[in-house]
Length: 452
Image 1 (cartoon, one colour):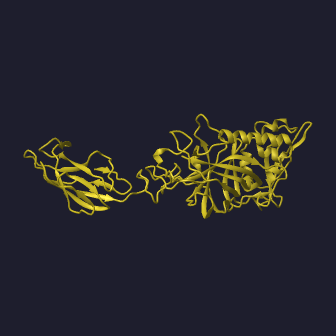
Image 2 (cartoon, rainbow, N blue to C red):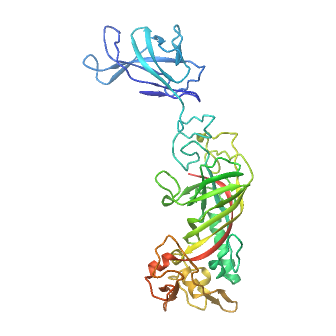
Image 3 (cartoon, helix red, strand yellow):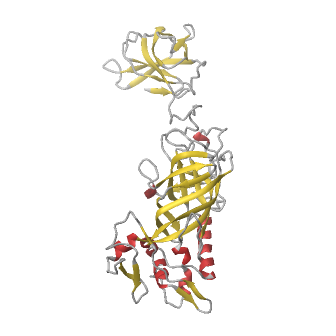
């Protein structure tokens, strides 16, 4: 069969049928098709049907097809669905339903069942309302959702690790940042974060699932997906200013339906976004940090029309058929993120460059966790990183021994090698690192982006 795509009002599908063909004394099945293929039929427009003979059986070559050049006069048995002009044979689609189109005259006789059906999301034609876009599929995270809604996504375009004794009423503990006290450590780590945000190596993406208020003013209950990803890198990319840029989510961060695996229950009131605690992955310098009891707050800001793309980032492609009148908030500011960073993920993070200058000889086989537990003092400038033990735990991880607080110790190579539980009993190191965590505190801002 061939399908005829309609405008915002209908779609026509003509099905194969069997009938008798009177043409030079031969008989065989006839198929009625709409020509040209994939044309559009508006409610008040007309369409000429052509007829084709399917040459099947012993009379003709199997599988062959011959177009019948003579035009037929068509009639319709349901004028409420499709009206046919009896002299021209032109058909006008009226409304949804089914009727039989009959070849009443011409060099053959035949009929076909005509179905006029309503529009659907994913047909490549934006219906207003309720569709905000229609990119011709039902996939998520491609600029237009599986329900043909605009995907409001944000990416962290600045990330500041709070160091020293910095805390506030929202992030009340900060053992990770509190360990970093020297100016060399502070500046070196923040410069590395800035560089990786700017080149896209650190890309933390927020997916506002099912959000209805695109102004970002009020949304009482929705899920915010948190995923890691990477930019589509072409000339002009700047991760610190990336409005409507394209980002690819990490495959492990989304499920088979392209829904983020990590989701936080979220609300927006008076432009203030707030999540409940949950588990997320935070891209960091050289590795990913696993955060438990993570919570986020920020203020949505602005209201703008999404950028249109000329075929490359930034912007939405014309094939997404985005509503040209649609607007959404382009950024978030005064963002705060805090949670317990697992000791296991810190053990997988390379030691900072500063560690090479510590009086304690840290090498290429040492991790950030090793430096945190052992501390770092540099010649002349003194203490840069204070020796610090984990101060919290992951409630979703099995407790090691009697549980938190855990105490870590290093071997002669200054690598964390043993762990004791709160009763001072030795426990398996792997279980301890999965359960033990350091409180943390980050501030951030975001830009609106497109996840593909």
